[in-house]
Amino acid sequence: MSEVRLTNLCKNFGAVTAVDHLDLVVADKEFVTLLGPSGCGKTTTLRMIAGFTRPDEGEISVEGRVMVSRASGAFVPPEKRHMAMVFQNYALWPHFTVIENVMFGLRSRGVAKSKARSKAMDALSLVRLDGMAARYPHQLSGGQQQRVSLARAIASEPTVLLMDEPLSNLDAKFRETMRFEIKELHHKMGATTIYVTHDQTEAIAMSDRICVMWEGRLLQSASPVDIYRRPNCTEVADFIGQVNFLPGSLIEGPDGKLRVESKWCCLTPDGIQPDFRPGQEVVVSIRPEHVRLSKARPAADDEANVFSARISKQVFLGNFQEYWVELDDHTLRVQASVTEEFTIDDLVTVRLEPQWMTVIEG
Image 1 (cartoon, rainbow, N blue to C red):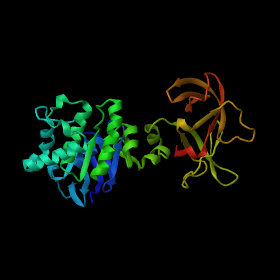
Image 2 (cartoon, one colour; image 1 turned 30 degrees about the vertical axis):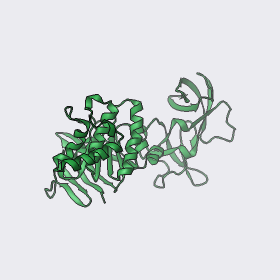
Image 3 (cartoon, rainbow, N blue to C red; image 1 turned 45 degrees about the horizontal axis):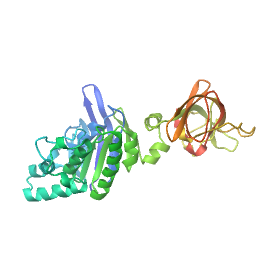
């Protein structure tokens, strides 16, 4: 069982706290992504797991074996942790051929040359580069170099695979291709994988679970669907894709259910958390693709989740139109089908569907 456990992990660089009392458990064979903006502590966390950076506090264990503990003084060096790391800059030896690069780690650990070559060729076959074993890195594209880096990592058959923004140097088309190839490799290998990125699309497409980090802290750890649809704070909601925020306060309706009183209309989101109370200031988040526009006026008795607004801007984005809708001093972004035609200054009816609204503490 290659479970990775981080307990009360802290790292400071002078007066800057890079990782702030982080607790996290990554299950055996799970693909977990550490996601967040630059400077949030995700790469520092990965380097502490790998053994390249020592924590100031806390403990890291793998399969129940302590890798580092500030309390006991235990420290297992990187080369003895049975982990492999894929770097952002590929880190290939330019004077080695592809096969020599992939064999390098194995030979450094004392694996016999014939066995190392066999394992390296198997790894190159997995990343579909077995026909390029004799080439040098400068003879490969960026995507192919990244595959070599992956092959080198998986050739050692690690129990834990660490990846630090491995796709950031590739163009958009290669990134999309490599996302699926890395996910497929993960299924074939079965290694516990911890992946670092600031790209929300990568995280959503590849992960079993996403851990959103912010200023050294873990804000939310959940499946990609839950992170996107049910963020637990405004920072998570705002970082993952585009989102609209509508401030308001909680009131109790005649039916005893909580709803949100905003300056535009009464909002009735589904599933307001049971620990919320009437009078509490909250924010309702809703994604642009879940806002509905129409030219028809709402019925007189249809007041919840519906209000009038004006189109102030529109942009054609291929498979959808994006509109900016003005509500007095507030703006909503709306993504609508290209078959729904609105123009600037149109007065429209805005409808927010209850199942797509999330109530967050204000």
